[in-house]
Amino acid sequence: MAARARAVDALAARGIETAVLDARILVEEALGVTATDLALRGAEPVGREGAERLGSFLARRAAGEPVARIIGAWEFWGLPFGLSPETLVPRPDTETLVEAALGLRPDGPHRLADLGTGSGCILVALLTEWPSAFGVGLDRSPGALRTAQANAARNGVADRAAFVVGDWAASLAGPFDLVVTNPPYIASHVIAGLSGEVRDHDPRLALDGGPDGLDAYRTILAQVPPLLRPGGHLLVEIGYDQEAALRGLATVHGLGAEVRRDLAGHPRVVVMTAGSEF
Image 1: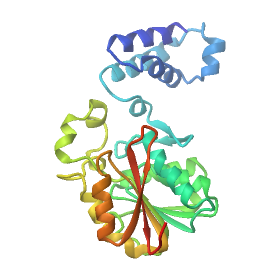
Image 2 (image 1 turned 90 degrees about the horizontal axis):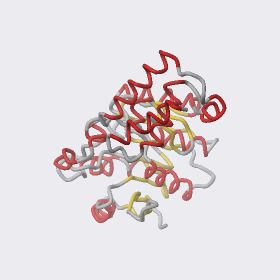
Image 3 (image 1 turned 30 degrees about the vertical axis):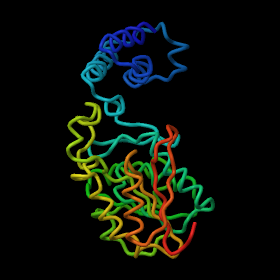
Image 4 (image 1 turned 120 degrees about the horizontal axis):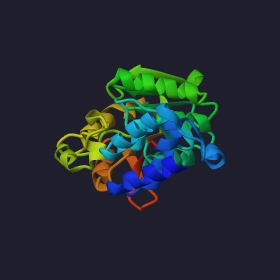
């Protein structure tokens, strides 16, 4: 399709390294077609409306807006998730947390909670793998919770999920078998130096972890241990340089700790256990 070729050229000219992939996604979304449609009907004209929509998408991408924000959706754990301004774009590294949880409890917990649920991607992914589990997603943002609730319905787990406005675990009553969280963990002074795609388009509330990046962890670790069943687990996503700090916080709160690494080999998830050895 000529439109896709022109889209690739336009994005490549702006130095976008993922121009080929981005162009394909934006063309499919703008024109309402699939990859198969492009292969079979690539010679058909895109039409005025399609051309205008694609032009708008390409202009936004050229200006630095992420593809996920432009199309308002992204995939995580092989599942579709809608986005909103109040939610992060789900990232592949976070799948390490899902993998760690599944490895700990192959048959699933009875009750789990996801703190700072955002789009609901972690909670929804786990509920799709554990058909007997019930989960609670908490977030300070009502807008994020509406998005998470819609994503639970979209992926067929809404009847086993509840969403509550709350400040971490303060509004929860235990016990829980499993608590998971991907909290804001970037130090405040670092945010200005992040890529524009993150700095200018992700909600700061979901990024800013305070002066040293550990504020949310301190609150979570003060609140969660009393909510865990004996042998229950708290899984937290961390930044690449926060392993030692989280191990220390776990020890202070009487939790055992092990680390899971992402595909790049970086520490990504700390698995903490209450009242039981690993």
